[in-house]
Length: 117
Image (tube, rainbow, N blue to C red; front, side):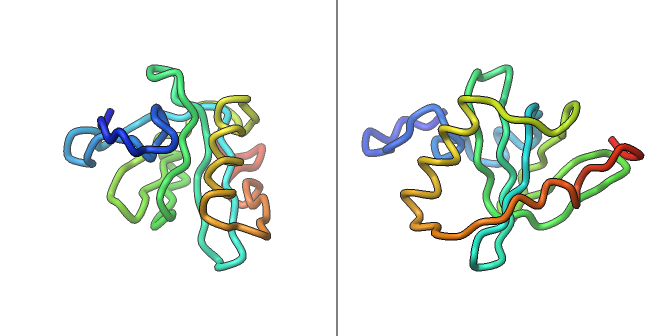
C-alpha cells in the first residue's frame, strides 16, 4: 500500500501499489458500474487485503478467464459470482462522492450470465 498522508481513503485502490508491483489482483463480490461519462469501473472486495476496491477505467474484459484489465494495466481476476460486499460498497460510495458521479448504471449483467464464469 502507498503511504500518502493526504490519501482520503487509505486501504482502498486509491492507495494501491504501482502496477508493476501489484499487476494481478483477485476480487470477490464484484460489480461493474458505468458513470454518466460512459466510463466503466469494477468494484469488489479483495480478500487478501480485506479492503474494497474501485478500479481505474475498464479497458478490456476476457470472458474466458473472467478477468478485467484496467486502463492502468492492472488485471483483476473475478472470483465467484457477482455480489455486494459492505467494504466494497462503502469504497464505491466514497469514490463516487469524491469524483462527483451523479448518475450511474449497474452493468454487471453484461459481464456475467449463468452460462459464464
